[in-house]
Amino acid sequence: MINFKDIEIKDLCFTPFILRDELLGRIQEIAIRINDEYKDKNPLFICVLNGSFMFASDLMKQIDLQSEIKFISLSSYDGVKSTGKIKENFGFGKWVSDRHIIILEDIIDTGNTMNYLLKNIQQWDPASVEVATLFLKNECLDYDLDLKYIGFEIPNKFIVGYGLDYDGIGRNYQDVYQLK
Ligand code: IMP
Ligand code: MG
Image: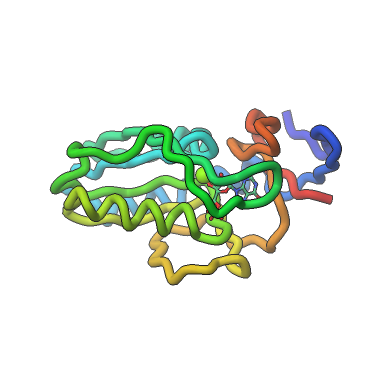
């Protein structure tokens, strides 16, 4: 069901921003590119939990290559602000070596998390590494990152829904909402 209404999470109010059909349309475009560019490469997708689970799920349904997916878990956010410190819950390992990696991320804000991931993954000697991020807050980026697949470039406003949370809440919505 499409919900055009504002939602309240704790002390904040969020308004509809990008609806499910637009999200799925864009994800399909990314999948078409990956299907074309990774033929015979047996790519290994790495989903960065928690926020990327819906993006990864909808993207993977459109991938028609022989491929694998694994999950890692990190966090750097506290409420609506990036803390700058990365907490690694479970990370990369030997399983990355010699593989063509596509990192699936929900959103890149300062780029601190992705910069950390890209530095770390190199230690395990992957054959190649590319990034697919559903959202990019371009104005916030503090690092020079090579981002191959970008879903939406968005302004510097906090968003929730479609996997993204505010203080753990709001991941379940199928649409994306922006802080009012
Ligand atoms: P960065 O390290 O500053 O790039 O932040 C990346 C992480 O912060 C993302 O993977 C998200 O988990 C979280 N994040 C950044 N912006 C938002 C947002 O607008 N809504 C929800 N989470 C966000
Ligand atoms: Mg994330």
